[in-house]
Image 1 (tube, rainbow, N blue to C red):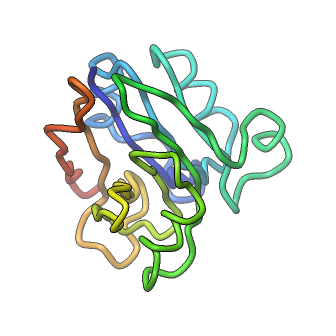
Image 2 (tube, rainbow, N blue to C red):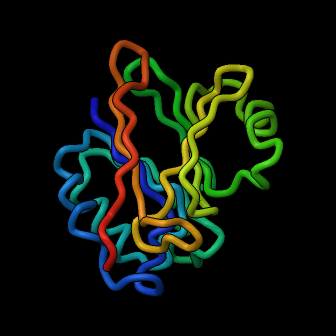
Length: 166
């Protein structure tokens, strides 16, 4: 099962459209995760129409239209792994322990907000993944997203994709 992980698209404020490289990944993904800060409902409509399955949440920059359609936290069981998605996890310091305490039944937590790619594991084994942002690199050298595979109860082939400058 192929996964596509994105967050913090901020359309149309940070970019006018999603990058072509990211759009090319949509038909290859069995499940698309979006960890919030969409800003517009058009992007949600686009991903809902082009994704086989979308697991998504709203972020702190998302207004009433998005909050009415999306939860603050979303869950999915895929290939024997328990996933959660949330936008904010707080400061980087102590993140693993804080998230492990908040989400004790998860194997993988996808989050956003910082626009900083992140891949760590808590002492409990909880894997924390932040795909960065495909449209707003902030202090990072590139705009990014993640892909991965779930097979036999394991997350494999995790890859950070760097998008070309706009």
